[in-house]
Image 1 (cartoon, helix red, strand yellow):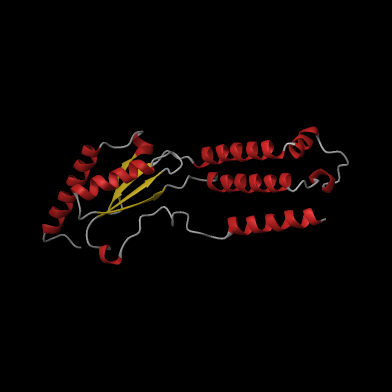
Image 2 (image 1 turned 135 degrees about the vertical axis):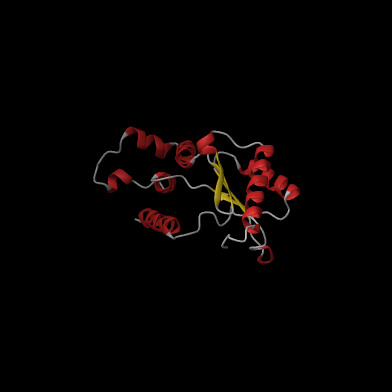
Length: 198
């Protein structure tokens, strides 16, 4: 009975932690200082964190800060479309519950009313470390596949200027410089036009 109370407590804590609304990009965004807000153009780069594009993002931030110090560069994780984000959270919750149940040696099938547990479950209870590692790594693999979007989306002043989802590749720095130059020149021409309403 003590194991059951422990399992229920852990399940409740994990469920509350996963269901509490949090900002998904809070720790992945580059912080903006109050002095730099609305000073000049803003470039937003949203990338697939699980695809390993964080390093490419950091490289682009350094390159852009050297060439265009007036441009504020922000970035964050590009959340996967549709149901995949919720399905990956379900996989995470299931993985954690299974690991807690195996480590606590809780008789799950006895609790469900089956007198004899299946052979694979008995093997998991007898080989806790191997079973937990297997569940952990398979669960991580499934989560990574569900949230991988392959995105590297760039927008300048909230206008999309590059999409890896559409082009299939990340822009070369020279291509990005040309896009920025043409965008900034276009805005300067509009700003000089007396008929242009701001």
